[in-house]
Image 1 (cartoon, rainbow, N blue to C red):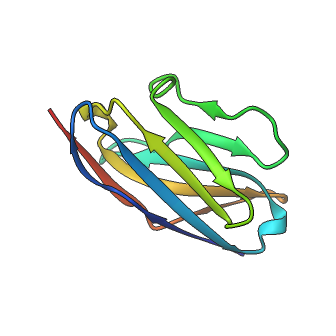
Image 2: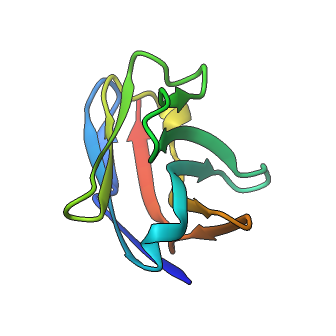
Image 3: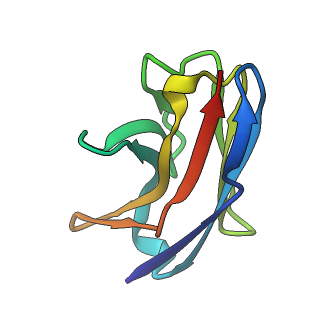
Length: 117
């Protein structure tokens, strides 16, 4: 079992920045990717960014490349999503995600990000 708790969402004007954080706990030795997804009402949850514990290059959705950066601190069991040049279309609930060997997926409770024009 892996537990994920997000923080850092909020409201910002277009062009602004936000930094989301996620604290992971539980059976972390089984985790091989950490990531961020987002979802808006009526649409499927989509992958925003993913980081690989083994060191493979991080991946990003085309819509956020060059604007968002995912990073992690293994000692603190945390992963961050730095979001810059935010656009109204980035408005969504953002979820921290962990994938373990098995595989099994886990999500946090989500944090709202609202970008106004």
